[in-house]
Image (tube, rainbow, N blue to C red; front, side):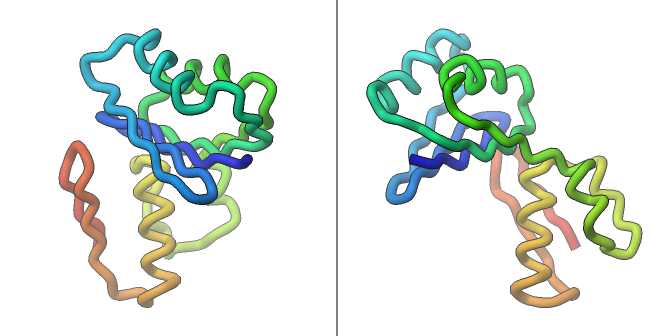
Amino acid sequence: MELLIDIGNSAITIFDDNIKYEIKNYNKSKNDIKNEIDILFKNKKVEKILLSSVAPQYNEIIFDYFKESKTIIFDNSKFLDFIDLNNVDFKKMGADRVIVDIAAINEYGKNVIVFDLGTALTMDL
């Protein structure tokens, strides 16, 4: 099994091949979050994880729980070395917004407005 994990400010969203899981992480201890992950993934073999996180304090939970898995962290500072978006300063944005903006540009072209309705409402032009 391979997982895509997006750690946001208010939720941890986990995608496998068929299912989307969401763990609300506000007002919960790291131990509570680990217990929820255990309920979802106990006795399941996870081979690879792609992790995107805007809340690095929760990364440790993923590393500890899935220590047998290969985990790749999406780091937009390294990723941006491979693309040129006319000197847009993506380094001040979360990795999740960078991915969505690049995907929107690839899908719809340069003139696009992207709304992200997460913990905060963001708009990128």
